[in-house]
Length: 219
Image (cartoon, rainbow, N blue to C red; front, side, top):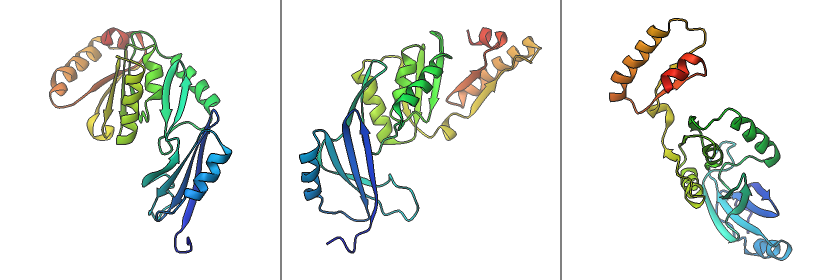
């Protein structure tokens, strides 16, 4: 009986005729009959029971118990092979996603050193890495970090560093330049000061800008 168990949500992720279904409940349910029905109707489908005891409106939280069928959706995109699970972040509309990522690539060149904050399962990081000199992906979620590392290794990408950390705590020095800053010597001296002193106590320093002055300092 399911009378005392609250079914909070039904979550479906479908890509390229592959389907993952999550039944979000407060307690575990016997979903074997539902799984049998699904498997009789679909070739590539997986069923999960997501145990979510939260009192707020967050849906994808808690333990995802695999009932049966496929565990992940396999995708080939941007000449990359990767997998997406039910709980991991992934853009819903792949067509729009690809247009956005292509736009991002317009700003990347072979000398670019990129930090991708909130990098999720690492897809955009890997796409940028095909064009940039090096990319660091920063993600607080352990499961997403593991997925990003898996994508990196399966596609044999060597110019990626994935970090699982809270960027707010770790990356705290930003030196920003502007094309409107006219005193190049003063700016260079200030940057050299920060680079020599702050590198002792901070994990990263970012020089950000596209002006001639900033480009010279970065190079």
